[in-house]
Length: 124
Image 1 (tube, rainbow, N blue to C red):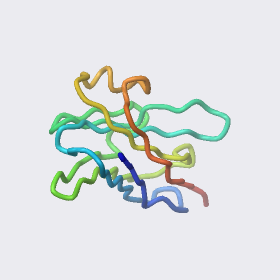
Image 2 (image 1 turned 135 degrees about the vertical axis):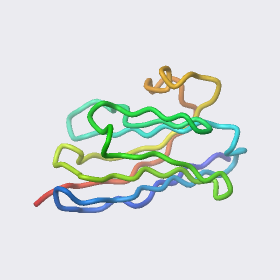
Image 3 (image 1 turned 180 degrees about the vertical axis):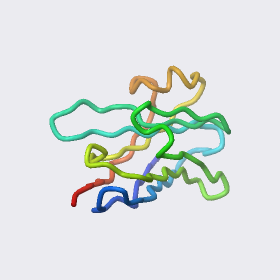
Image 4 (image 1 turned 60 degrees about the vertical axis):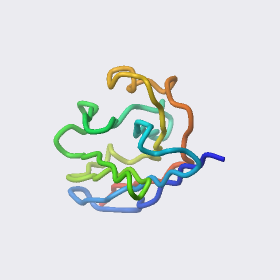
């Protein structure tokens, strides 16, 4: 049974930082690529970041502020969120896929499994 479990969300002031984690089980983690998405209230789920073995991709809205990484020995993917803004408030989801290019990984349709999400609230 494949499971993705996100953690690390919380409430933070504008300008603050958080580190989200996504622990994956039930598959060979190193064989898969990872994506991060978010859904703000009353908005569609949107792409945030993706990582293959090393190459990464970011949405323009987060480029330069967020960093995606992975630790294959821990079956875990991370998303470091810096310089947070109120518009970053959302439920953040991780997901796994393979065989697709970074460009295609911006679409939700290529992902096989999803986590349940972790909530990030940026508020003063």
